[in-house]
Length: 583
Image (cartoon, rainbow, N blue to C red; front, side):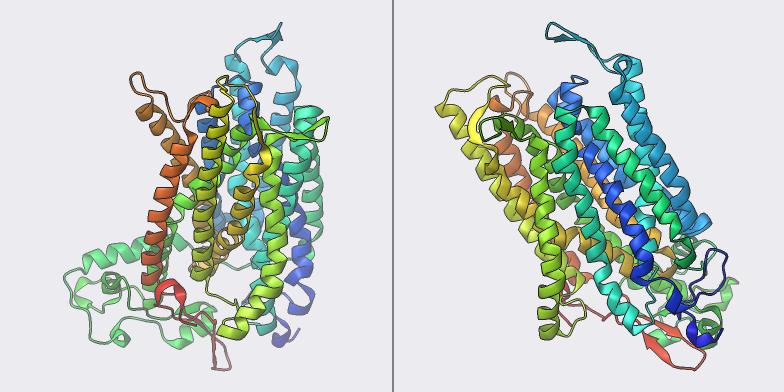
């Protein structure tokens, strides 16, 4: 085997042996992965999109409690990847962490299917009066849900980063293929979500919850078998640092210890390894950036302390994480807006006219399929038309920078919540005209009035969700890409928790004394429109915060040293202008 036949990024097979570039990785390897992603998303959205209805109609929870519990569970699903990513980056690697976690996920799905299928695990009803769920019934149901959340912790970030690992950043052809990877990866995710919101939701409400949860459980098992069939052609990243997160701690501690030292006039005087170190180790050298300069003191050469300073590359890794944290903070409010899709949007739909023809009624949660459909249509258009068009104008391989992509998505999302507010004002007008007061009375207003906000949020997600996933993977330090990707998942998780907190606080504050809560059990006699105005205000303010944060962000610049002595740039431009306008 000649060296030139091997991957240039040092990828290995499952046993740690170097792999041949032509026989491994790329899209032929990813083909075995996308099936799992589609079925996993089908399972997740099959639960999440209709969970608020199950909690209110089957477990008989009130509106605020059900919304809070949906947000808490969804938040946990997106937060637990922090643990899974740390285990992958520091101990087991992505493949084995995914393997163990996927089995936990499937076990949770089997338990949940059992919980909704057996009569002994559901409350009983007699003559229209339903008993409260017992402690055992509630405990088993929620243990099942949170088992799924635990399993998702090790699968969500690791499967996507493992897919991205199949492309060699230092092979120009493969790097070009990787530009489209996250778009088409999310396309498979959207496809699974579409099947869930169109098919599974209907099955759950009309043919039985057990069948509605059993189908994705079987699909998940089949997709795992397919995943393991691709094992011989998978590429695995070799860990080059024993404790990736340890460098962050060391840089912080050293910078604090050296806080009284003076920085040298030139960054070239800071501590850094010789080029030979990067040639021999295969690690990537990260270039100096003039931000968060207080961390530069960790790389000041000072013999008096008796401890070696950090290198510029280590310091820049800490800067990258700090910069990503800044961007992460301004993604929390958009994630809160996204949480409305599976909570209040669904509850609104249940008391609107859902008739389609004389006999068919649309499940309220199925309107979420318009989010997915708009994504499925937008992704090929974005990848096939928008990117090439903008690439010709800007010279950027992605067409636009990652932060520009996020900014466009955030603007569309603000427009979507503004439309949601207008639609709810219209619904309240119809309620007054027809003097509707009952909590289950149907408002004579078509559920399709909600469609524009669903479609716009879907389009926004093509920019937001895919852009965030790619941004956090792309900008993470080399040995922390699984952990870095958890910025994406944890943002969604914290956004769900934030929505739960906001709902609870708004309910308590606006419902004080004799006042009616904005979001009471009876949405026909509440003021959900006021709550949407509140979300619109904080979304607009958050957009301003994003513009400021993006103006401070500096993109990562890496090099890799090869034995021939040349330096290959990783192609990430130094960008210090607002929204990444420099190309």
